Amino acid sequence: MDEYKQVIIVRKDLKMSKGKLAVQVAHAAVDATLKTLGVKPEWVRNWVEQGQKKVVVSCSSESELLKAYDEAIKLGLTASLIYDAGRTELPPNTLTALGIGPAPSNLVDMITKKYKLL
Image 1 (cartoon, rainbow, N blue to C red):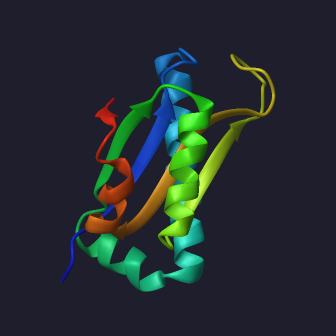
Image 2 (cartoon, one colour; image 1 turned 60 degrees about the vertical axis):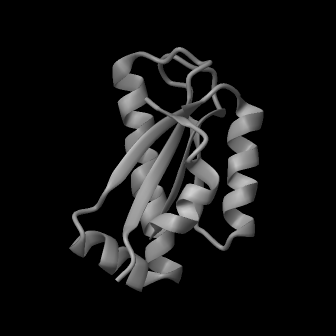
């Protein structure tokens, strides 16, 4: 069986507090999982059986995050863009994170291997 994982990419240029960053990562993980469950439930099942591997990496800009989103969609992966509501640290509708997968690791790596671990 293939290895499965989920990768969350967060914007480091926003300089979010640790708490804000953690919440944005959580939003991305949950939303991407729910989307995947709707279209590829077997990927979610395999990922859960393998321990729900998650990796968090960072990018340097909104445009970089949007580029990764486009690449994920072109590969047939589920991807969730996370926009902050603007109630605390950030202006409303600030793009903060991208969740990709869960999906086969080899596909996710085609997009995310260039990013550094957070």
